[in-house]
Image 1 (cartoon, rainbow, N blue to C red):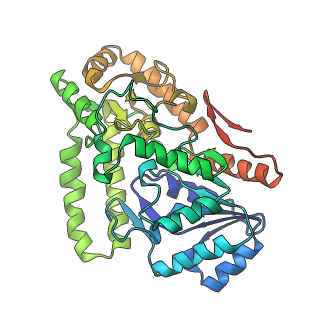
Image 2: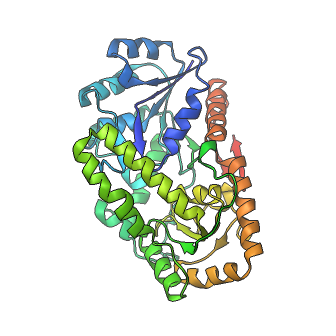
Image 3: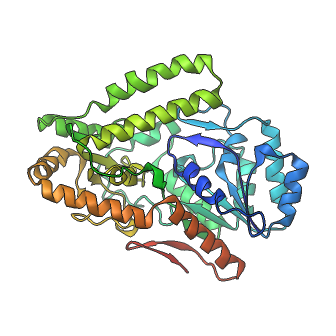
Length: 388
């Protein structure tokens, strides 16, 4: 039996939740079991682990036994049990004579250790047989030759680019099997048909330096720019602080998340164009697949392996540097047929490659290959998911 152990969480990046919803629909407790460990006792979990042939251990459990404080409006993890309980679950997994895969979807590479004690983190790396994460290939260039923007995103973590690459090297040197697991989206999140467009362009999430530059570029180009930040602040974030005082976190966080996502989807759907990037680090963020799903044409500062994930410049999106966003947007606004064709191509490609149902198929196929002794790794290459 393939066993997935996780605990209920709400993440602003909805990938993990969508994946487990789709995965749970496949669970039959015979060949596949999906267990939210917070619903079981330690004794029951031990019996479940005993029945498994392969264990997939989700990073939500690591979050529950890691940092003390999390930004609750962005991330909630079930702590109905004590930290010691989640650590006890890990110890059961660690002592079991079973192969273990770390499910590490939608988390930044520079936050991979979750503030765990070094000894626990190192023990995990030695135990894991494989890792499912969005870094089948290192997302950052090792030399500084082509670095265009300062690495401001790493400042809150007191990390350098070299240290982040060092984390990649540490993980891949300890864990033999790497399975590419980029963001995914559920069928219910797709917008069924293009809607009326109010704004020329939206730059959602302008906190990254690259998005700030793009925002400045489109404002300078005198385009009608969606006021995403101010709308989000007053319509969603400000009320959150009120109901966060009135409700428990397991209630206030999902309310905020649902309201935030509905506003986010609505404002993007009402924009003719959207600029997307994964910060100066060039990570593959969920917005790269959300924008197509919302049927809006995408201008993007792409990741280093964007083409592997199926994105072709001029076919599914228009590539740009952030400071050139205004110029590229004007071109697409003047050539609406080009923008509409790109948006249509992109939504079909996302449906084919990046839905939660597809991701479940990919991960289960990899684990079945592993059970047969055939799995060396898996990843995307030029728009195809390949198991080798």
